[in-house]
Image (tube, rainbow, N blue to C red; front, side, top):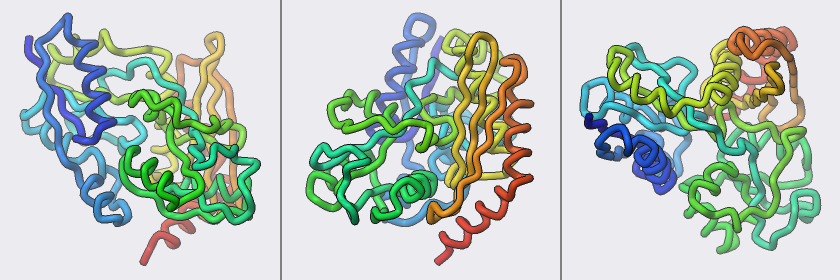
Amino acid sequence: MKIRLGGRGSQLSLAQLDLVARALAERAEVEIASFRTTGDRLSTLGAPMTGKDSFTREVDEALLDGRIDVAVHSLKDLPSRLSAGLVLAAVPPREDPSDVLVSREAIPFARLPQGSRVGTSSPRRRAQVLAARPDLEVTEARGNVDTRVRRLREGRWDAIVLARAGLARLGRHGDITEILPASWMLPAIGQGALAIVTRESDRAVRDVLRSLDDPTSHREILAERAVLERLEAGCRAPVAGLARTHGGRLQVAAAAFAPDGSRTLREEAEGSAEEPAALGFEVARRLLERGAADLMALSRSAAEP
């Protein structure tokens, strides 16, 4: 059986495609195709992201029209609802979802001098950095991992915040200064996980992909994505979430932020691991009751030119 995998053309995406290709090698003949997405083009131009599917649209279009059989995405880039006809077929075992600090002088977050420049293009990271250290200056940091680390070393920033999973998949653990704890730096929904997407109607491919699925990771992702869906928030919204399984029980934490870090709403809930979406919806309901929609509206207003 031949399976055509597709993803973005970035170094990290190609590494992720290779991981999936090697996992499928015993069951299928695998081909890889890469695509330049809207998000890639906007990032190159230094422009803000537009739409909830900036990094997935072109790949999913290729999947829908039959040019590829499987799309491999970073799950945090996935919109809260997939395009009609597509299905999340598998979630492989998740990497550590933590954010990390990469500091030019290897200085940990708490010891960064007042006024230090911290680079990130994520509203979620910006808000949490400022909530913890309002004395820091947070500035835009766009581009792929290599580009951001190079610009850091050149002196554009004193530190940057990245996903640990991306550095791990690129074999760049040595760049990490400090792993930031979820107690104050809650990760993006889906961070550290891969989304293996295919056509809902393609039963043969779905059967093959089932071998890649990690049920625990998949349930945790379903809980987190339920938060995103209920809040009607895109992947660029200042919303964070993390689900963890402990002995058959699922713990879900989620938060929404004011863009300047001045206000944080955080809720947690625990329930059966067999009902992940219901638990995620409950956490989102509590956030909405406390005014999460207003915080997201503030962020949208701040992003407008």
